[in-house]
Every structure is written in structure tokens, then in C-alpha cells.
Image (cartoon, rainbow, N blue to C red; front, side, top):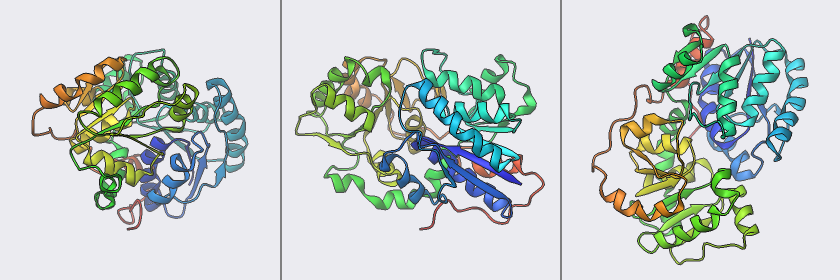
Length: 371
């Protein structure tokens, strides 16, 4: 059995690590090939995740780097195609909705290689988002669609996807969190930054709608104002830092703490200790939901409505002025967070492996990373 896993960004490393571990445990004699596209190439956004998650070193580094959507997708396709032709895999596994995902699905489909898409069926219904296009294409051409929430079923049915291609398995990103929870709790990132658990707001921003235009300056100013009421911790994505510097800096406030990007364990330690999280990320909406941390999303929509339905996440809209309402909204939250969605239990990757490798017997429950 020859399996190729294509990953390229921080969230997709987290989603795929448990899948690789489960597949290797179930089929230890197979050839498991990891392709790192290099869509995220900053050390804190890529290599450190391989080290922390216990994923073996990539077999192929494509070093795609940054660029427009067309350039990044085309470069990935051009460099991935000879890898697939050489490896001749029986299956290609790809997660998420980034340009690496789109490129991998197109290359594999044209070469006749079956594709398994982890995190299928998510829809924001916003076609101005490049990720939405990537999701639709990935689901259309994948043979195995692995879903983590019920609304995905209806989304895929509406697009005419046959039921036999759908598999409800749970959330593999949560598998990683569960497996590394002890290390996350022991990391004490709040203490290292001098903030008290439960007293600060954690911020992540990276989407073009907020970062690439005039909204960024106002957003940073609003964060500085929020920090007068509670400390704000802001690990700055490389893309966001570049745009902040181009706009002349910003973020000068005593309680607005700007840091470099963090590794997975240190960052999740900050998430787990936060009083609130303010983000435009999709995956963080899920991690906060599992951890019971109030999340406020600076977007007009979300492809993860299960987080809204549970009440763990609120959409603020694409409106920096709404940041001022976070303390009031936080005070109105119920004191007891709801239970996570079904199958967000740390075993989703094992269910993926059972579907993809039904003729193999699980040798042992896989461990994502050593202590």
C-alpha cells in the first residue's frame, strides 16, 4: 500500500498528524510518503510543527513559498506532479482548503489517483473567499470525504455528492489537541508572557479582508483600546506583520503584547489560558469550542456554523469597531461552556484509517508525539 499525504500550512499539519499516525499504525508495512508543499515556510509556521507533532520528516519538500493564488497553485501542481508520477501512490490524502489542497486534488485526479479529503463539506457560502472555491473543488473530485460536523452532510447532498463517498468521523484537529493536552497545559505560555490565565484576550489575524487593506490600521487601534480594559496578546502572523510594517507599524500600547508566531504547543497553551479569543481563523473557532473558551470572529460568515450553534463562537462581522463590544459580550456569556460536538473525542483519525484501510488490523492505538 502506497499512500501520499500532502500538507503545506500550519492548520493542515495539525489536522494531518493524527491521520498519518493512525494510518502508519494500521498499515506499518506500507509506504507512507509525506509531501510538504512549503506554502507556509516560516519556521514557526511549518518546521516546528513537524517537530512538536511527531510527524516524520517530509520525504519531499516542494518549497512553493508565497505568491498570488494562481502562482502558488500552479507552482504546487508543477512540482507535485513528478512526485506523484514517481511514487505511484494507491491513495492521496489531503486536508483542509488551502491552495496546496486544491493543487494536490487536481494533480491526483488527472493522474487517476484516488483522493481522500479530510475536513469535507464545510461551506461559508461566500464565493469571494478563495478557500470556498478550494473546498468545493476538493469535495467534487475526492473519492473519500471525511466530515466532522452534521451540517457538512446537507452541504454535500445539495451539491449532488453521493452518500457512499461521505464518512462522518469527527475532527482530526481535536485529536492532536487531546493527544498533547498534558504538554499544552504544562507549557504555561501565559506565565512566560507575564499574563494571568483567564485575564487576557488572545488575537490572531491573517485573512486578506482584514490584513491587506485599510481595515488593518483601525483593527490594531481597536486592539490597543481593548488592551486598556484587559491585556491583549497578539502573536503576529508573518503576513500580518509584513502589512503592519508597510502601513507604518502600530500596536504601541502598554498592554498590547505583540509576539512572533508560536509553535503549536505554546500557542494552544495561550488559547487554553485565554479569557477570550478574537480571530479570523477557521481552525481556532474549533479549538476554542473544544476547550470552552469564548471566541469572537471578525468575519461576516463562517464555514464552521456548529461553533455558532453551540454558542462558543460569535460573529462580529468584518468590522473593527465591534472589537469594543468584546468585554460586554464576554460578560453576557454563560458561565458553563457547552459540551463539544459529537465525535470530537480524540479518535477521529482512527475512524479515517478504518475507512481507508479496512483490510488492515490496527496494531495499536497510535501516538501523535512522544512525551
